[in-house]
Length: 133
Image 1: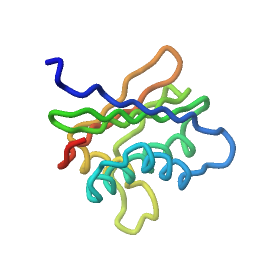
Image 2: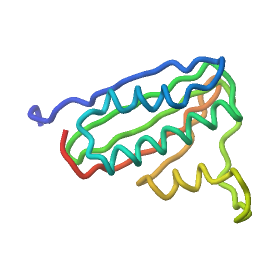
Image 3: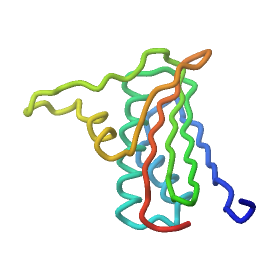
Image 4: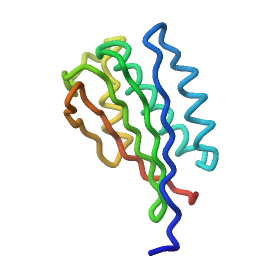
């Protein structure tokens, strides 16, 4: 039990100004350097969708937390914001330009959910990874 590597936790406070999704993706890539490219692509897509939802629908303050652990190797993405309104998994029209974000999160992750906080909520998603940290 003492031989297991500790979880690695990285937190980024989101700026309430202009959304810098590319900057958030660069940060996520930099704190998860050991992920295989396929796993990293999935993590970056889920981070993008969850952070985009904050800028489109939620309230600040907001933050992103990436937690990676081993045995099995998983990455947990948590996005906290000041809005109590949970995200909704909706159906969409095939010709709709938007609205697929949570469908992608649902398909790419082992599981995801929402936790109500005293002020706001936490939306989290867990992705299993093929490699080892």
